[in-house]
Amino acid sequence: MNRLLARRFAGNSCLVRVPWRSFCDAAAVNSGTAQAKHAEKQRLTSHSEEYDVAIVGGGMVGMAVACSLASMSLTKHLNVAIIDSNPALVNGITIKKEDPPDPRVSTVTPATISLFKEIGAWEYVQQHRHAYFDKMQVWDYTGLGYTRYNARDVSKEVLGCVVENKVLQSSLLSCIQNADIRKTVFPARLTSMNLNPSSIPTELNGTSSTSPWRGFARLELSDGTCIHAKLVQVGADGSKSNVRELSGFKTTGWNYAQNAIICTVEHTVENNCAWQRFLPSGPIAVLPIGENFSNIVWTMSPNESSELKSLTESDFIKSVNHALDYGYGPHPKSSSARDGDLSWFGAGLTSSAGEGFTVPPRVVRLASERMVFPLSLKHANSYVAKHVALVGDAAHTVHPLAGQGVNLGFGDAFALSRVIGEGIAVGSDIGEVSLLRRYEAERRPANIVMMAILDGFQKVYSIDFGPLNIVRAAAFNAANYFSPLKRNIISYASGEQRLPLFT
Image (cartoon, rainbow, N blue to C red; front, side, top):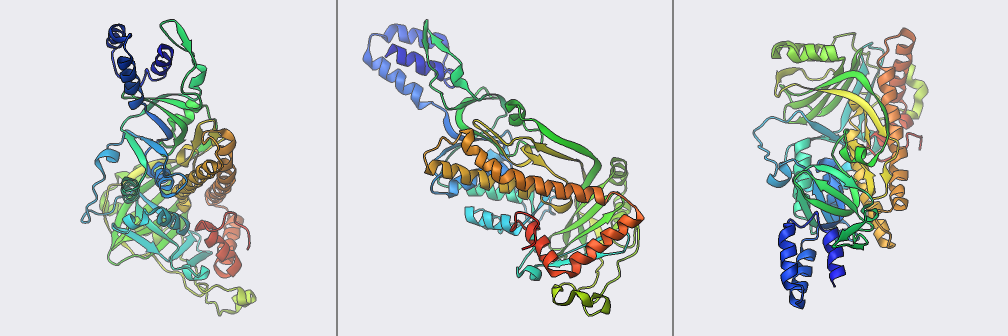
């Protein structure tokens, strides 16, 4: 029994906050009584902080993993730890209807909306401000071509929904709080991690023992807490992921010579269309966010972003309207589907092909602060190792020109939770790399394809060269009038098709 107590105490030494002297004194006095030994054993086991899954980062993607695990019958019994120093995870997020929309928003695809509905989180989103859109217009500054997309082109009601990040986060928090799953929130930061604690010999009173944490990873937190978990899952500790660094994952990528300005603006009329214009220094996007508000995401050089951020509100609004109207070049020429030069498309024309070019609604007021973020591309060379799986920005960051970043992260979250469930169904250890590689095999190729497409767009539209401008215009016109191509683009962008191939 003494050897058993020694082994249990050694394995839990970072869990039990009891002075060493007190334990030794008590053991010396009561070592001869079975009652004291039994009490000590109960004390050690009752404080055991042992988890099946530890989610490091309680952002949107990390919380999506927790909610997904809670929604499946195979995984809802798991004991989950959520590690994040953000006070909102404990205190909640305050959302006031009278406040203007926050500039930090996400464009949620129909595929992501379906996943949110499956886990029960979308009902909470619907209680707050959000904006569906069923139309989108894309054009460039040369005036040589444009494309209009409509949900009708793929027999859908919407192309997507714009939601404030704080609404998504609050909805996922509400979902997990009301879920029937064992979960513990640790309001702290991860400071160190040992993925193979069984390799550390333990010793007490000269007696060696085997670590009781074989098959677990050990995590030490900034508040002194130590926990053990079968799977350390990185949710939203971001592009500078601590777990990725501690695990030794290498990354590939580069910084773009671009910053993004984001802000909330107001129109005199309601906006129900998503707009994107490619300018010489980068794209500007206008996304509906409800009522007469829209979200601006404007990409440009770091020097330009500094200048625009320092402008007065009046001058900034003039710059936005200039960029969305006749600034940098003329409007594209609208063509009718009945025009003779389009007759060769024949039955391939989409229902939106006859919609003419439209100028976005004018901005009349700046409704939030202007925030500036540097842009980069980064991709982990591997997503998994024993006890570790990377998701979201910890695994990949992309250019925001198509609003796909958070959707890729949500795709990771739901794929990982599904693989965990499949492992449990066949009795696998959920921390084994052989199981986790199934998650990597599903998500890494899909993420690489999307990253390559977005990076290609960024590079192609960063060059102002006559012949290339003509080629780009031809691509816009082909996408606008050729039905199979347009449907394929919409299906891929909405998350319903994995690869951009004709179907």
